[in-house]
Image (cartoon, rainbow, N blue to C red):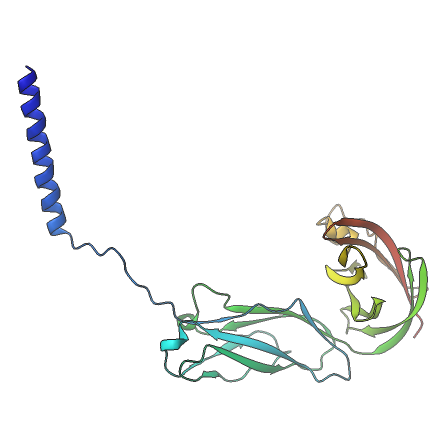
Length: 262
């Protein structure tokens, strides 16, 4: 009985070996297929571009080409749905050129504009990189005067304020020089302050602000919205409840006030 089992096992193993050999002979196996990485993509945009009335208005965009060392000269077309920027008809790359910086003019249209620039043709899009360049562009309009009162710093200062069309206001050098605070308004004068750099803490470094309700994911129109930030039309005063935070954590929520004095 043991001999029978032994010979049966040998027979099964031999049959399996023959079957495997036959299968491998019929199948042309290619262990690696080299898919060419080609196409165009963008480097990442900065958080925002802000222009004062006297500024020359343009943004610089870097377009990249994958595997360019072995490439000949080429061109790529860009597209956008925004009327704020004027794109070139095409971007040209010399043989072997991998990066191209292009200067794109920005129209003098006051407001808060979210602009997307994309690689126009599907065949030109790189599969492993960003093919859309997104940037918030803020164009300042009418120059106003205001008084900014900070609960955080227990201070009151005269400030320059720019009207951003019907979209909101820019408070120039609000907490410190070089860092403006931009807030937007909807058609009901609800205030939204998106996350932005506000000032630098001597110990903790960069401090960012955001309106308190936005920091909770609550926006105008939602059932939980309370309007902690708002506008008093009689006194032309804006009340901003701002959350201040840094890498070490939150510094707290503070009631800040901007009164427009013209």
